[in-house]
Image (cartoon, rainbow, N blue to C red; front, side, top):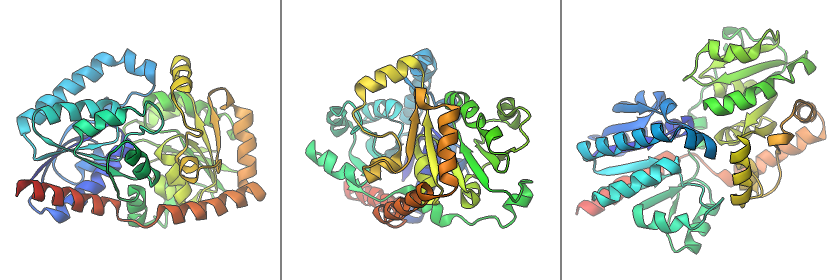
Length: 372
């Protein structure tokens, strides 16, 4: 069967790659075409457009880049129409993907959605649209099942795909030597994969390095940017290094981390690395978000646990002093111990690996049933 996947950012590329691998195991004759990234491309099939050309964050950023977004959307619709897949598999990225879902539904193409849009966070009435344009929804957060049920929609909880990726991870024994890292405690800096968030957050992350001369800071760099791009922010800091495509190796040895809000907060927790979560957006975007968003937390760790496990420094709270104060408490003492204990509880809630495999089985079973 022919599978068309759409992933619009780094995390979607990761989950898409694992799903492609699982689908190939279920359907040996599977063909793939997709919007995604390097990880998906490494699994075979045809990469139509890279997510680096698509990811815009915040309300104002979307407006400023609307022409590009609409151009990408038009091209995606045309490519789907031309290829005529058996199923469209959408991965997160709701602003773009829900519109693509509506188009596919009009054209009689079956639509599966892997990793639910965060409709529980704001504008919950979007579920009504999802019910119309999505045939099968696969969720990765346990509380989403009950949320959708309240809106009259049955969904499948498949576990979390990050557990799959972590289970496959094999640490490099020479990671420090290969990247010329010292024997000092490492503090991981995860500024995200999108240009806007890197440029807003990385300077604040790096501003604390002088206060921790005995630690080495290591930036987990996104492969879609060059080393020179990151070096413009690094300056002459002697205790800052840069690694590409080795985030899990970095988390495997890190003592603590400063992490941009997003999927990386959960990855960091799964690796049992104490962290402080940071986020900054455009002033207008943040003002609108504060009016619309109806959740208590922004990090996945806190949302899943339904309590403040990790500190979130948002907008005006994202300062050098506050980041430094949090980091000091994470390197030793009771705050570090409490967070690590909470991570153990989180791991139990998350369960076992297998999300990609379970999702692939459900998609193939659904397609075969529909073909009968």
